[in-house]
Image 1 (tube, one colour):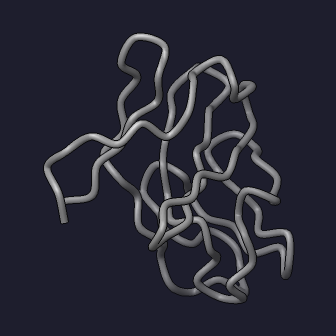
Image 2 (cartoon, rainbow, N blue to C red):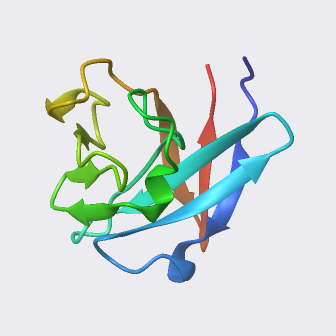
Length: 105
């Protein structure tokens, strides 16, 4: 894990109530912007079916997996609808200027 911040994307590139995918050489992430402008970065693969969450649907504080329709709270990572039973990781996220950044601790 690192104390360094990673730039995921431009703040303007994510619409409110939407999600974009961000990949590194060793992982994939989902960058979510809530309707109120808050942002969250979570693991990009569903803990149930390993589908890419960035292909899912954001509704309020939840993201729905496109494969089996399980849902996660994007602020806590907790599952909120089956078949998801295992939480996803949520990373410390900030908006720095016009960039969305996160770090893995």
